[in-house]
Amino acid sequence: MKNDKLTNQYRVNEQIRVKEVRVVGDDGSTVMPTRQALEMARHQGVDLVEISPKAQPPVCRFIDYSKFLYQQKKRAKEMKAKQVKVEVKEIRFGPQTGENDYNFKLKHAKEFLLDGNKVRAYVFFRGRSILFKEQGEVLLLRFANDLEEYGKVEQMPQLEGKKMAIFIAPKKAGTVKKSQQKLDRERREAEAKEAALQAEAPKTEEEMPASGGLFANAKISEDALRKLKENKE
Image (cartoon, rainbow, N blue to C red; front, side, top):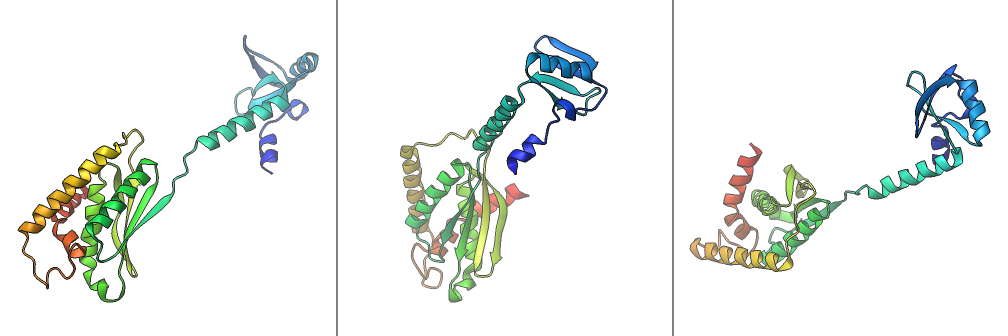
């Protein structure tokens, strides 16, 4: 059916029923009666193909129609192959996501965005952990802030049942991919910064039910939250 659609896209030879046409070629164009153009096409052993029906008069060419269709199909196939298929990659966090796990998922998210894919990151709340949905929002906003160089927020965190999700779209092509050495250095710097902040922050059992978990992420994400909200405004 796809071939029929392409075949029926052009009128050929006797299908062209206007009185006159403009025949274009390498040496220019000439307006002539359609009957004369058909006779010239037969004499040359080619077809008269209407390539621009809306022009006044319609524009035609002397070409081998079978070869012309083959070239059109080949060109359409090449264009389709060049089209980038955008996929949505999912990153899942738990209420007690530790820093090492966070950095591991952050690394994968950067790779997804560099490949031109979108990222849907979400926190899954199991049971009573839904009480910590505000901390889940902070975690996702921190995640978006850490990916600011690679993508932009397409949808702010939203609660969908037991999941709170955020959508991040890749930035325009041309972003230079960082070397693994640079990524590792940034990760070490982030870990050192977190350790320093945690050492300064007061810790109680009520405030920090699980070391390195969601509350720890919330503590170190206040600046990221404020910065991202200011950018959105």
